[in-house]
Length: 135
Figure 1 (cartoon, helix red, strand yellow):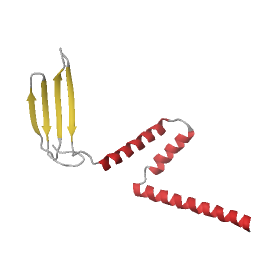
Figure 2 (cartoon, rainbow, N blue to C red; figure 1 turned 90 degrees about the horizontal axis):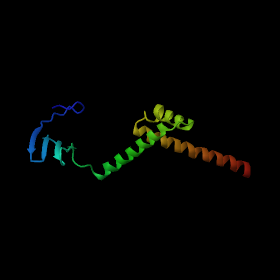
Figure 3 (tube, rainbow, N blue to C red; figure 1 turned 90 degrees about the vertical axis):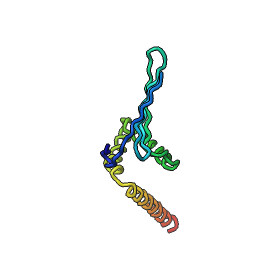
Figure 4 (cartoon, helix red, strand yellow; figure 1 turned 135 degrees about the vertical axis):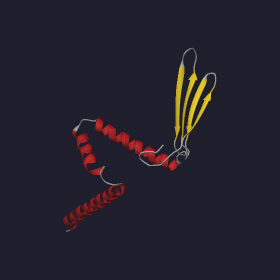
């Protein structure tokens, strides 16, 4: 099987296990790829289905923290999209048209430029006030 995005080719081995009240079909691929489908009898005529997929090694804590931050940002964006006031619409428009189109490096540079401009404005106001009071 060849994956569409990565173009990686994976060969799957199929393992079937049958018991009296359980059936399991496991697909084992290379690079720690595994899909397990199992059916369990839960009583009279009831059957439960379980699916488990493993496609990589467990994520390191730093990557989990990054995903957590990404998830929180996504929740915030969706909450903003659900609001209907003018501030939310203007914020979403700025995010969609300007901010989200920037690369992460461009976003950091933009924040740095905005912070420097804010400090320059504060300095300018301080000079004007100092000139007026001391002047």
